[in-house]
Each structure stands twice: as structure tokens, then as C-alpha cells.
Image 1: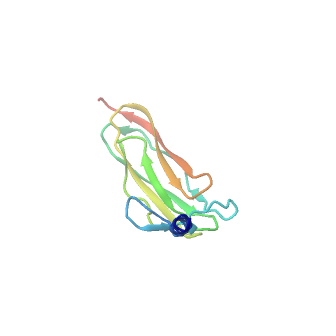
Image 2: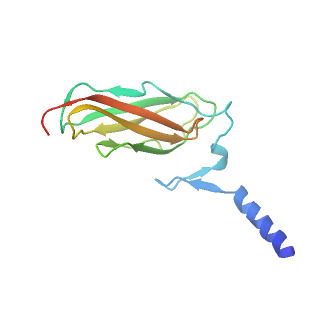
Length: 145
């Protein structure tokens, strides 16, 4: 019986000091940074959630940075940022906590390989409510394949 109680105590102690490690840079994110309180949660406010590029030639590259500000009341953490296809490349994204009132950006490069109307997306997972955000890249690609 003593062993069960001691094992339970050790298990609870380990869980209470648990840290989540960001898979991209190995820096520890403590559980107190992950906010589930809607009133005090971080908020990602983008200058523009859709980037409309003008007509571009197939194979050329368009660069853009999605700029945003944390307008919430606690530190903003981006856990994951992914592009919807290989033609959209992320050129880095903030790995450090973004304090309330601070700004940051997510730079991308889009190199289309298909002509016609194109729409791609960038998905973000963060400690916001809701926890996911989707950005869009749109425009027309001209030329021959």
C-alpha cells in the first residue's frame, strides 16, 4: 500500500512540473504559458489575413510577410506553422514568446508550378482561443507549364 501511495505522489509531482518542449528549437515552454482563460488569452491580430499577389509568371517567386501583433493579455506562443503545399515555403517564424503589445511576422515565399488561379494557405497553431488560425495566399499564375 505504501508503494502505491509513494508511486502516486511521485507521478503527481512529475506531472505538476511538466514542461512541453517546442520540437523546432528545443526551448522549454512552461505550462503556465499555455493559457486556457479566454479573458486573459493572447490574441493574434494580423494586418491582413489574405495576401493577394498580382499576376505572376509560373516559376517566379513572390515574397510576403504576414505581420501580426499580440493584442491579448498574456504571452503568445506559436507552436506550429505549416504551409498547405511545397510551393509555399516558410522563411522562419517566431519561436520566442511574444509579449502583449509586441509585433512579429511570418515570412513566406511562394513559387507556383501550376498556371491559373491559385490559392494556398498557411496554418498556425498557437496558445490562442481558438488555437488555430489560417492565412491565405491568392493570385493568378500565367505562362506555360
